Length: 317
Image (cartoon, rainbow, N blue to C red; front, side):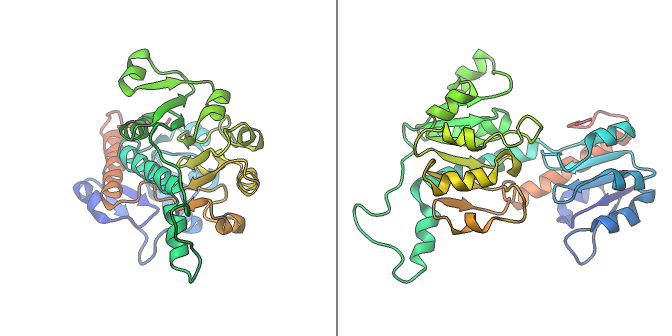
């Protein structure tokens, strides 16, 4: 059975499934182009896709024998879900392996931004760019500060556990409020979105990208934030209106931002690159070798279970 893999991933994560499937990887390059996928997908039963390339109607129509799209990652906004569903194609994702690595990066970004680590590092590498002194390079401590988490799924909860260990107070907003038992377990408190924005010292974005979350953080939201608030986005770039964020950073409406994702990724605004109160990383939320291999295994297991008549580990549609 043929499985077209759109990105040249490490083979370790596929090793347990080579007897089940004939994996087709890009050769001597990182990724297939859209045209290359269309030319190869005609007799393929399964597509293992990445967030870097949209799986649109044209690709889906070219997959005459396609039965399942196993998306590599928790996000699936790169796949035309409704069209795949209309064609009777199952779509799955890989939420479990991404939880801890993404939470780890998000909390790393919080500390980096608060204590100005990347900013000071860059200045130290430039002649006479930094000043030394007791009252120079002052950052913000995390202890007793309030972290607002927007999106309290498994990643949000993993971030909350790390923040709690650092002595932070945790408030959250979610589409549905968690049970009292879960709130007590995590020592977190639910707030309506407007109150969370106004009362948080740090805000971590951990929502999926949907119609309701697109540009959730815009000019109005930014202006309603507490003075000096810092925004961390490890969710999806378009959750934030990037132009509004840049203006808020330049005008001092908020204190800073740390971004793993960008609205027009991989293009990054030149204005963002020039700002000192911003930490930027290239979508590395799950970028550890162990996480990549586990995501591959999870995506393969979704395919194996589907063709064995079992429920995949995680189903989108």
